Image (tube, rainbow, N blue to C red; front, side, top):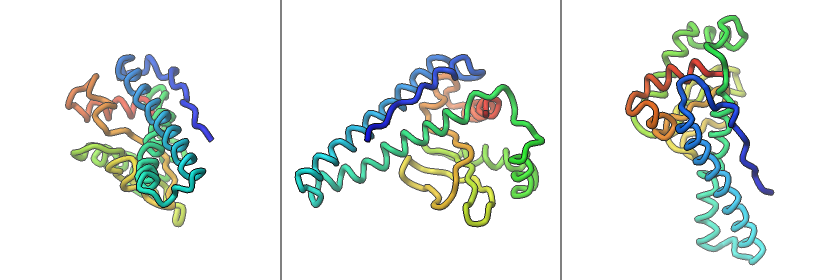
Amino acid sequence: MSYQSQDYGYLLGMQGFSEALLHNHFALYNGYVRNTNKIAASLEGLVAEGQVDSLDYAGLMRRLGREYNGMRLHELYFENLGGQGRISLDSPLVEKLAEDFGSYEAWEEDFKTTASMRGIGWAVLYQDNNNGRLNNCWIDEHQVGHSLDRKPLLVLDAWEHSYMLDYGLRRPEYLENFFKNIN
């Protein structure tokens, strides 16, 4: 099975995100798709050769999680974007956020705080499949820190490549514009 890069060109012209930033981000995403496909093909070859107990196989299996999750997290991130302003405050999601966080504003502040932590990673709003509660979580790298049995509802890329070209070290400004573009 081969993965195909998705076209997110419709995001060009989005408020607060320059064309250069988005083109660079799309190129990075396309690299994750290519690497995921290369690793999958190499693994298939090693299986066909009976080399599943080799160091090469083990190394590729470890790398596959990083590349695949990098691909999927970017897809979820881009699919979050493209909205025309702030989220509708009378939606069922906002009601659930208020129920679990006390208010929409308290959730937004917590999400931004999570996304502002020092370091590289991702901020994700998850819904727990067991109890339905919403939680903001931090993922250090693509393959480290995922909450099991939770559905991602909102994904924010907090790696520097997602904002430095436009904002430098001003991550809070990037977060404000991210919120203006949630779809």
